[in-house]
Image (tube, rainbow over all chains, first blue to last red; front, side, top):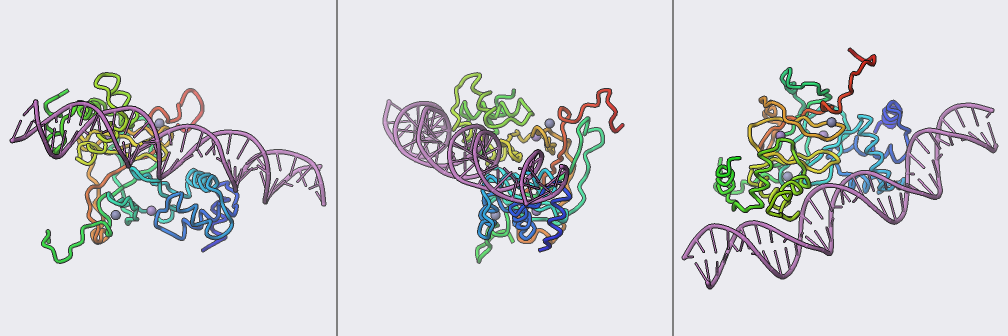
Length: 145
Length: 145
DNA sequence: ATATCACATTAGATATAGTCTAAATTTGTC
DNA sequence: GACAAATTTAGACTATATCTAATGTGATAT
Ligand SMILES: [Mn+2]
Ligand SMILES: [Mn+2]
Ligand SMILES: [Zn+2]
Ligand SMILES: [Zn+2]
């Protein structure tokens, strides 16, 4: 999409805009399906330039550190990645591990005092359950209305 | 601690109370430090009965499925486990990955309609930042008040 | 233009976390 | 005790991610 904007945001974070790094960032901005590192690696290599597996991981690490990308850990599955665009929360499917965006809403801060000497960076809300694909089909069977 | 209570909660979930399974559950109830599978394996084997690595993983899986234990995925680190006692949230340290309990507070439900056909099971709040050990020491150095 | 140097990429080896298999054992029930 | 189902086990295996050391690249200085 906006080539220049991506370039600027990389350089604004002190990261060179290399073809491989750009490809990772652009892919994440064009897709909101929270791909895994392996999926990103495969996707950016379907078009040139060819990027190595190590570079894909290196760049994802750099982008996360720079605050441009969010990493979402899912129990028992590969981590997923997400360009930090508009603020949002996540729904994670118990069955298939899919991560989906949920509309942002403000989050209660920790009760004052319960934070102690800790330094708070962010609050994150995670919804869990079954995604649309995994929720039981209703068919013609008798089931809770 | 309460041997009988553990036994009953296992059997109430359709799980036999084997020595290995009991040891995992008892360890999790006695410690609220969110150990990894490897730490649990090591701890329960410091005392008898000796439990294999596979069994430790099997039992953790069973306990999570039964709803007695919670698994916490942490980016780039081994999963951590937590006996589900009193409801609470979690603080996860950006630097050391430590998971700490935070006082429970009610969580906003997703805006009605934004849930679609998904089935919601739970809402979880995660605070992130630096834990007490990782927060910058203040010493005598000049730093933000 | 060429030298320089920090940053970046690469292939492949390595590490870590977790799962699977198939045989042996334990447990609850009759 | 006999039986069946659940559980345990060692170790092989898979998946995910990181590391290493050599090579490449581009911005800047000369
Ligand atoms: Mn997202
Ligand atoms: Mn906890
Ligand atoms: Zn699903
Ligand atoms: Zn810490």
